[in-house]
Length: 325
Image (cartoon, rainbow, N blue to C red):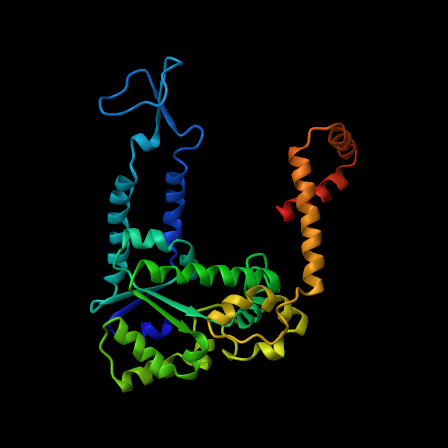
């Protein structure tokens, strides 16, 4: 984002997260078939079909009144106005760049609103991602937001990369880059992106943009919290990660790592014993959670009576059952 923002015809938006906010409205729209979500009336307007009239009141589902097509007809002008107003902050603007990593979760909605949108997907080695998350959780970020559990990181990384790569099947305007390749050849990588976005550039301007975004300069900038910019190394995880963490992460992410050109360094064909124990505990918790939710036998009733008498034990069990959900 910061590299692209150096171009005079670009305006960069730093994680404004508009489309995820818009997705909250979309989730409401998606639940329009849920219980409730009905209009109740004694008189139904012509052209609207009620769902049921047996109680004397006609029940009209939201979907019979607000179609998906109409929903996007209402949403698109709002999105266009928001981004046009932000684009107007730069009088020479040709491209609006937004950096919101979580958009990998809502890219379909983005394409539905902006079918000509471009997507740049930067992939980084998940072992480096783990080290970055761990540093964030221990320094500038909320530790509840940035997990540095290797199992969770591996699963999240695999899921997000898989999601993002699905974009290539939906649009030709998808560009995939590896962080490590960009670090190795920053000038060539940036020039490639400018060309892909049809932005004029020359060798000198690209070189200046890269120099302006050096790690040392970024650390002194106000673009991110203190501690956000670290060393930016490609292989720094080799010093920072323990072998046990590497093995668990690689076991889970090995398939996608290989697809993306990252070599594993541990045996990934055999499940690490630490992960085996962890999954066994998780299965036990999930089994107890299902039993607590579904059972109606005498043992369940007696257990409930005992737990009511010992609230601290009840609180401990509920916390652990919730963790396994």
